[in-house]
Image (cartoon, one colour):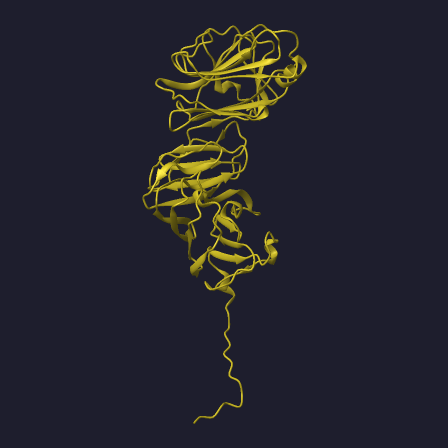
Length: 430
């Protein structure tokens, strides 16, 4: 036999103040969408989460609700004084699947968890597929190792905040905003989509691979030029080369543009924009010769009266010898007054043979509405996709169209702007 102790035994631990050190952390929000001050830090991999699951390192925070993946996630840049939301990160092929994470390790310098995905969708051709993912997080890195069963499209997607510039280079898809550069690095350089959102692959893929979601904090300041997009990020050494110039005209940068041949006047600077009179063409002196994306915010002040068919026209050309003469056999986008009713905007993207690959006419309610549009700021964005097709977006008109045909950019030059029969000077704000 044995005797039971007449007093309870207790073991006590002194916890040093340094228990919270390390950049890799896990939190339970207790209730969904609760304030960060109410979260509890999790140290036990067997913890039963009551609220949202939060994993993070020194720069990257991934908040994951316990619901369907497509509605579950938010990614934040947490390097500054307050978290900045970037967008959603999840596997689009299994967006309807429910979140069910299994933590394997929770350490100050290393996190590891796994989950299975098996509720596919017809759009991604993943209804009979499955994926088992292992996520490993270190203080400066997040890696999602994918065990793929079946063949399907889309895979991981970064649904970013609106109007973010998305660029693609060397197996890296990057979004650029005022606080960070973020996106996906792919171990397999498959065809991707980056029209507003970042999608890992647009074709059906069956090979195991890994993807690295990243957030690089940065502050893009307004000083002459904002150097932001078209990053080349090497997967070997993380070098970043700046190739793209973005001008918000917060200061007079007119000297950085040159007038092209055939111009009858010259450009000027006015407070927060550059002014291009009729018959004038300009080209940026510096920047990428082969940008994958080009956007402008423009307006014309005090447009009134009637305009001829094809009049009030400006073009942006991407090939050919820069000149303000009328020419159609360059890769270009043009905007012009369409017809004689003075209520229609003509929009064309042409290839180097002069053929239209995008052709749209937007009809306004009346002439007054048309003039009001021209008198207000509006923005367009043209993207030369990896598959050689062209995407055109004009948010104010609800236009977002991709060409069915491909285009050749042989002989590409720095973009240049030309003008013909303008009713009022063209004002460029960004």
